[in-house]
Amino acid sequence: MSLLAALEETKLRLPAVAKDRSVTRYEPNELCYEEKVTLSDIMEDMVDVFNVDICAITTPGSEGYKILWFSKSKVMKPYKQVIQSSRLFKAPFRRECTVIDDLSRCGSLQNDPLVVSPTERLMFYAEAPVLGPSGKTILGSLVIAHVQPCKLAENGREVLESVASQVAEIFLRDAGETNDLMLPHLDIADNRIDDPRFRFAMRNRP
Image (cartoon, rainbow, N blue to C red; front, side):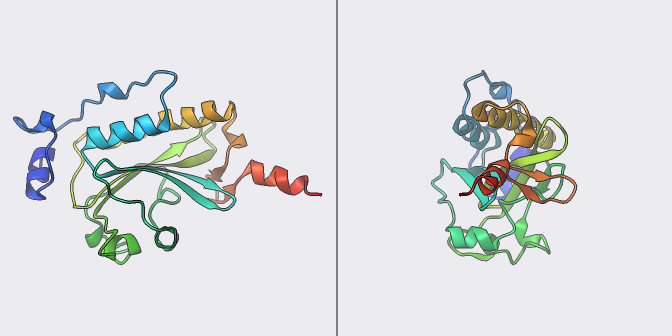
């Protein structure tokens, strides 16, 4: 099924590019970023390119996960307690891109707080891990989500993964680092959160 047909079936709004033809591929030429691009720029572009309600970027740390949230349709970021009890917006499910067209039909997630909540209900969820260039770390995840079920176009996973790699570069740039092992990350071997900042603080406690 084309993206246009999927959007029409689920009564989602259509981007201008989809009004007169079936969209089977995204053309994310605007996602080739210049040096000074910010994470906010990326999240806004992702909402436009994928025509979804939400884009979020999650990062691990010693006190749990931090979530940057963007929504043009004013879908509010869920309360902290709801996110804490949810399996979404945390560590990536896999090292590859994960796409769930309809969370309400996903056995392991259909009873998740962010799926059953009448005020914070999400139906579509896709995430790409933000992998460190060393190949040994997961620095976070890039997520797009929608309040109704929908499908990605044929190159949707490729676009998500490509932008996630640019997010990793921004993490390093903003931290003034070249070594991703020096950033808060998930160890690929065991999904353990490793936060060098926290280790440093513990070693230097009075």
